[in-house]
Amino acid sequence: MSKKIAMIFSGQGSQAVGMGQDFYDNSELAREMFEKASERIGVDFKALIFEDNEQLAQTAFTQPAILLVQMIAYRLFKEACPQSKATLFLGHSLGEFSALCASGAIDFEDAIELVHKRGSFMQSACESIEAGMMAIVGLDDVGVEKVCSDAQEQGKKVWPANYNQDGQLVVAGMKSDLISLEQTFKDAGAKRALLLNMSVASHCDLLAPAQAPLEEMMQLMIKNNFEAPIISNVTTKPYSNKEDAVSLLKEQLIKPVKYKQSIEAIASDVDLAIEFGNGTVLKGLNRRIAGNLSTLNVSDMASLAKVVEEVCI
Image (cartoon, rainbow, N blue to C red):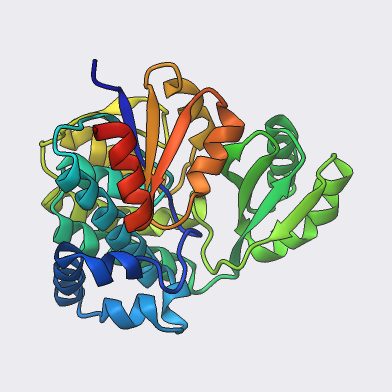
C-alpha cells in the first residue's frame, strides 16, 4: 500500500548563503530552474544565493530564493520518484506558495514573480513605519495572546503572528511596542522575548496595504489545477480551488500562521511528511509538535537519495 505523504515547505528564516549549491552543481534541471528564475525577474540567483550579499536578507529577494531551492528539491524528488503522490501539501507562511506551486496550481516562473512581488508589497507596507517581530519562548499561547490583547487595549500595535510549537510563538507589530512589552512577556512567564532581525511585521494588520495588489496578481496567476489539497495557514483546513486559494492567501498576510495547529490536525491522516528545501526547520518543529509523525527532508543530493531509497524503492 502506498504511503500517505504530506509534502511540506518552510518559510522565511530558512535561507542561507550557499543553499541549493549541491543541486546546482549536480543537476541540469536545477541549473535550468536557476536560469528561468533569473530571466523572469531580472535577478542573478547564482550571485544572490551563492555569494555573500545583503539582498538575500531582503524580503523581496529572500522569498523567491527560498521558493526556487524548494521547488528544485521537490522536482528532483518527483523526477526520481514519479510514482509518489502527495496526500496533501502544507507550507509555513511563504511555504504555502511553494505548496501551491508543487500542487500544480501555479506555474514555477509565475510563482517566482508572485513571491518576489509579495515581498515587495510587504516591504512597501512597512517602509514608512518601524515594524518588527519578536519570538516569545516558554510562555503558552493563552499567555502570549493575553499580553497582546491587553497591549492593544492600551493602543499598542502588536499581534500573535506565528504559532510554531508549544512554548514558541512569534508576535508582530510596531518595533517600539514590541520592545516596550519585552519585560511584560517575561513577567507573564516567558523565558525569552527575542526581537528578530526583521524589517517587516508579517501576518498582522500592518500588512493590510499589501492585500489588494497581491490579490490582483494571484487572480491572474493561480489556476484551478490542484494535484492534492493544500492546508491553509489561516484555517488549518484543506482547500483545492482557485477561489479559496486567492481568498486565503490574501487573508494570510494579516492573520497568524497556525503551523502547530495544522500539524496537529493532519498528523493522524498521513504516514509521513517530507520537507523540501534548505534546512530542517519544519522537521524539528514536527518532532516537537507530533512526535509520531515521521518527517524526512530533501535539502541536497545526499538527502534526496536517502528519501528516494526510503520512500520509493
